[in-house]
Length: 206
Image (cartoon, rainbow, N blue to C red; front, side, top):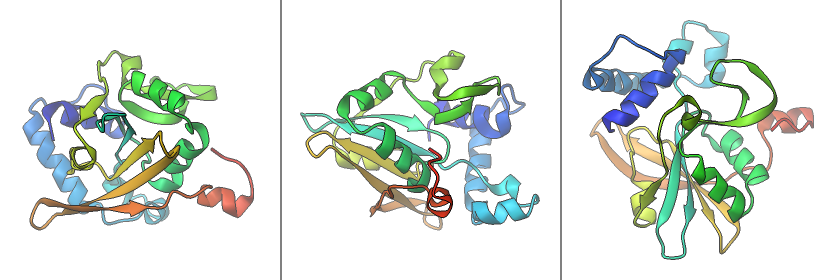
């Protein structure tokens, strides 16, 4: 994990904008500790406030395949699991033009946020990018699919790729061996058509 990414996580974590940890190497150790503690499900955390401190965002990358085989991608901080981010991408970013526009904005805090950076409630959801608060976080270019999937394997849990030739999204779940501290082969995930709560209530929520 680069110092830039570690700083990004610190600025997002618990909403702090200016923290006390000036040494990002120290904070990197804190990030690793929290990741090792992330064995509690989000459902369990809702039932116990004592467990919420151990839950961190589900980080992901969103990419698009270029004609020459390279991939352009951006970081996405919150709710990167297929049942949320996957559904949003599938529903609202289903053509190459929309995905290219998404790349132009750079790294993303939340692709469908109901609040701005000042936590003000909005009438319509926005793509809340880091550029909106003055950070320069342009998209990254990867040489090929392997380079894309193996990028920052410590913190990226899901990788999404738009394939223009097929006009579909693909999703891979990152796998990391915490005991040996090495990445393992990612696994393909199915992106559902609806969020579980939409299935339960029969309402459109995303």
